[in-house]
Image 1 (cartoon, rainbow, N blue to C red):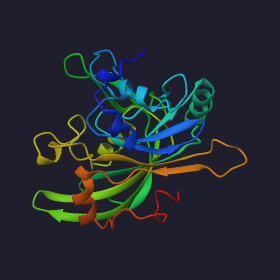
Image 2 (tube, helix red, strand yellow):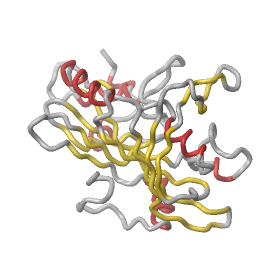
Image 3 (cartoon, helix red, strand yellow):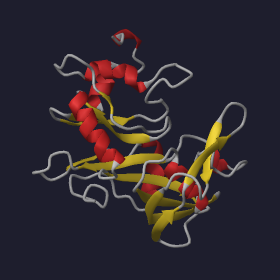
Length: 251
């Protein structure tokens, strides 16, 4: 049983990050800068704080999918084994509609389009690894749309909305880099030696639409724009979070 005292995110904070809850699932707003699970290296992780999210059930919820350590936003949890199987099947079959927002370095040549490039894992520096385009890799498909751009002293920055149809590791980050517009502060796939790789990763899981209940509309949840991206989002035309539907929530 996890030790609540050892959780890196407090009960008050993790509870404040619950965006949606029903008998089957939770959707929380993952903070940036913390891995969702321990991985091979161990260490503090968000999963340790799920003990605070049982809400009367005998066990804490579990991850239904993954987000990178430095990606913020919508993270779906299953509250019990049946829910995990159902939601896992929906993610695996591509039936969950996922919307990501990113601030990228530069601007894509086309305002919208589809990236269809298979990806494979390759060895990286030291004991690390990274993903790269590989025709023999796993299929990876991402739609994108430019939602605004701004000229800065360090070059053009753009607000881009991504809709991945597959769930490959680092998919959006690699596909953005292959557009020659890497996600800002991406130390793996960004342009080495530029200011654009400094700071917090500018990638946010903005929204999910989950067709969990066959006789009901999909569950639609969106995470508020994170503080570390807000200034650039607004400079690129973001008007602020409102109760009304936007492209992400209404997707």
